[in-house]
Image 1 (cartoon, helix red, strand yellow):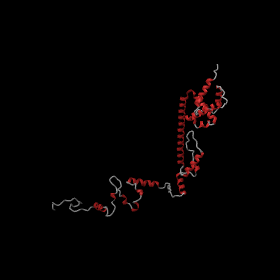
Image 2 (cartoon, one colour):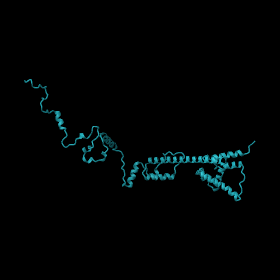
Image 3 (cartoon, helix red, strand yellow):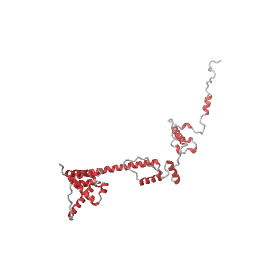
Image 4 (tube, one colour):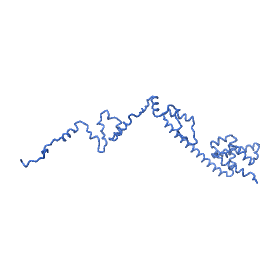
Length: 297
């Protein structure tokens, strides 16, 4: 045997310059991409995102589906599939279009939770702010509006609660403005008239009583306004002067005790109502009259 020949181990392939076919190489040759077929290895880049042309691997009738626009990688595809599976078996509501009939819209509103009729909207679960109450006519009109526009009971309650907060805030702002105007007016009048302010207020009272407008002016807080106060005081002063010039009977003297009795006999007098802007003055006036009473020994 020629010693220069290669000594081979049992089962080893001879070393030659030609390619050797093995079972593994046969399998690899069989899995090579056939000519004209789509190369799926080009679908995904190194970061795991689909290539721009990934839809070309789909059947032609699916390539233009807009629902695929958001699919960027296998993760988003899996999430989309899972979400779709979870929706199977759940109640589905068909969204009406502008051409839908009234019946279709009513079915849609009912599915969203709209009551059977406008009067079925309930306000029982709505917390009412202190000092506020429902106006039946306003609630009735709002119920009809909500029903016509398909609001559910939950949305109705949220809308009413929001409006109550709006009204409460508006009333609070109005009260603050009322009190601010009163404080500013009283400060200005005290500075202007000093100890003569009670007499000026009496002139305002005379004007209000003469024309029968006292209650409405007090209710609306109009006497808190400096210009209105001064105008009424001037009217009250002119009324007294007019009576004297026309030969009217001058006012007779009224004792302090009589004045006190008249004040306490009038249950509408500011002294009984702390919210009345003249309450503070009324208290001061009564104290002044009491000081004029004869001192008991």
